[in-house]
Length: 247
Image 1: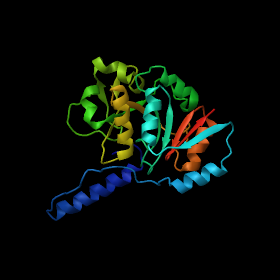
Image 2 (image 1 turned 45 degrees about the vertical axis):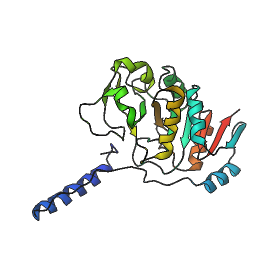
Image 3 (image 1 turned 135 degrees about the vertical axis):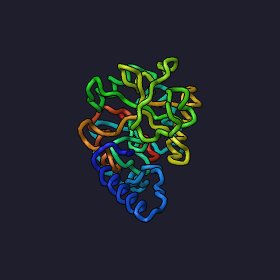
Image 4 (image 1 turned 135 degrees about the horizontal axis):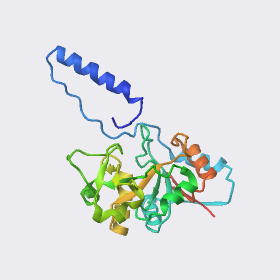
């Protein structure tokens, strides 16, 4: 299941009953694979502007509305910055799939400690994971089967010759990766961000971890995103088409 937690037991039970009923009637079991998991609430431009107008920041910030925010985020990532991103519909489940995420250059091994100090406070053995352009997956890891891996739930052996490109987004003990393969028709804006990053760096892989303070849920709306930004060491937040940064 795309969301690796107890809530998917109900979905599995429903599939099982459906399959049993089909078998009783000697009918084909035509269960389709799940597709994009952006089932949650969207963040509208109106919500963002209203929330920004009324929000009380702890320190001085700057903000700018940028039409092509994906290009700007890609540029910041290529420069080594860490950027939180909250845009579009929220992901279902416990894995961040680009719309409620903290993003970074996966080739910088120091970025893990920086993100942990900023916000995540994860144990040293808990690895971060990558988002990968689906067209570039074979460049970074080995798959024993050709099935897609869009949900950050399957683990693959990283290619040793590319280790330096994903060192911050793999398991430190064995360099395995648990990727999100990004498809253009599933999330065109996030795919565009990765394509811009590929044009700038030559690599189609970035570090992607959930936008939340460790132990708390992933952010949902504009207010949540600003609260996490305000309470953490994050410097940049791309909220919809607004870039907000601390002075």
